[in-house]
Image (cartoon, rainbow, N blue to C red):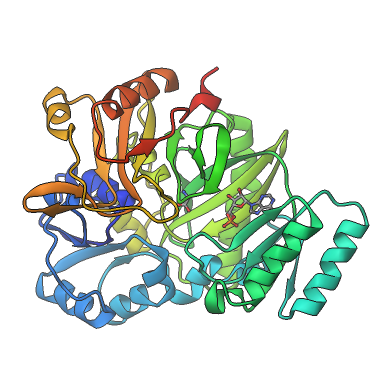
Length: 424
Ligand code: AMP
Ligand code: GLY
């Protein structure tokens, strides 16, 4: 089967890598892809508007299209492909609102009894400010301000004081996040530890993948600004078998019932970011696509045929699918450009990858790389996800860091404590 993957990040590289292991794979294309993906898939230069992509898929007899990022899903790329009779992995636009609109996601959770933080929605500064003053007036220790729409991961302000919270509100209503901030959620501040729960669903069946955890802050010790994710590991020991059973019962099964009763066409992956506090678990957010870099560490452990599972999801035929997981752990360390997540310089040659390939002890997923004068250079904020497996999280982390230490470019940096929380 010929497969098309849409996207250009580490997540898409990991998806392509996983697909490559399937004996059923014919030609593999990724649009736009990146320099690393181009080593294992064709990355043709096709305009990335929906109609050009659909025409490409038709002309290349693509049997399955996997849409990586949230933006094309929210813009209806899956709808267009399906309307033209093609098989797609990824929810339609109506269902993608679970990520595209935080107020939609919140009301979905409330209607279907999915545990989540309390929240109120506002469309004007004075009312929102009034509410915030009340919240802090009754002694709450913080609040979370969320722009309703997609804001490239920037629209959430976790405020520990009224001033910080008011500042967050002003950012939203002053247009710092564009239209995404026209509606604002003010949410109860949850405490605990976060984990990422990914699950395949076709709206009839839901199958959780192995658990994982990412590291959102830029620097060691969870300090510094929020990023897209500086590293991940799987499994997350925090998600014990009992906790996974509770997540399945209270979140995933309720989610499935919600999809059915709202008649949402959901064939793809659902990502629930959860906050765990003792026995308690609540959903912080839904994403309608694979997490990045969680996917890199999760797919490294998948022993089943990913192409088979993705096709069955797209066909609405997931029932009866069994996923087999390696008992080994996997750790992914993200290497980023100096200055990320603020501004950074691009175009520096990356060294060390060839030596690594010879030793074969780690898998490097590219996120922001390109070729310049036939040299591999950094071209994004998050540049590489260096992943390795090991019998324990500790050995997986040691294997990943051994590889990381061989790779560098001018200004490159990475966190030195990925998975440290999980190493007992
Ligand atoms: P979201 O995009 O909703 O996942 O928010 C991004 C990050 O903000 C999450 O990964 C959490 O670290 C934090 N966050 C979101 N909602 C809350 C909440 N209600 N309480 C505490 N932290 C939160
Ligand atoms: N790693 C967080 C995300 O993919 O949204």
